[in-house]
Image (cartoon, rainbow, N blue to C red; front, side):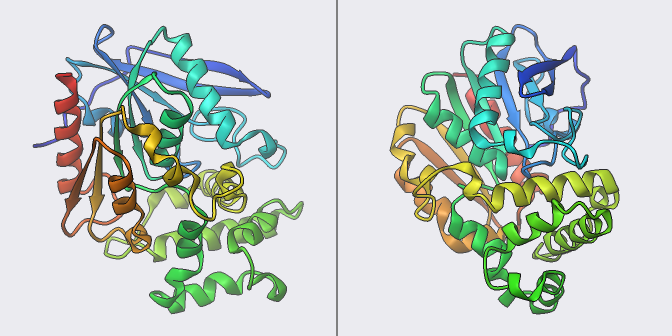
Length: 320
């Protein structure tokens, strides 16, 4: 089953969500169709037109947004004077609610990839009754063990890249929270320090992709690279702003709250995030969830088998 054809938005805007932030949104497909909202990864990646193609445009009213500080939302995290203290999980959740009400939507399907799956899960746990279904891929829950795996644990699999990664940090910063240490560099008033840190962080993100191609064209854009690295380390270094208990996994702990929400988890068998076992634990803790494993796919929502499973899921829920 392939992706749906490319489409263009029929409406878009900039929503004032407070704290000096404007969030860019767009709507595509059928204006009277089943509402669905797309939550991109990162944090800080921004939404891609590619995500529109996971939904039947004749059936769905597809809402895409760029979360605070990224994509076409303003101010952008790449600007040194952008206040990151107001870019937190609870504010992103509130932004979603504000957008839902702004668009006159009662309930919507929530589609999320990677960080978007964390945000989607927490949104459904925090605002019960407004999520009709969840479709999630490259699944994560934002727990501290997951961050530790991505920033330090995978160093055992990629030792040469890891040596370069920690080599950019001051010697006294290499034994603690690596994301927080990098975030301190990315908040430095010294622009060359910030730029070197952004390059080193995105080089590591590229290195831990388990199979070719290991290139990310978006990281070649200095503005994207800076905003992305600054936002990811801001979240990774602060427990994803999920509060006390995130060492055990707040989202996973609260999985029983999802019992009335049908959901599909689409996971590549080569996604290195699987090494924490979190997707299996989430599936077993979440009654009503379906787990679809895709062989020979990694952390990539666009992998053919993953994309086909995601389209199958949105097609299935279109009939509900």
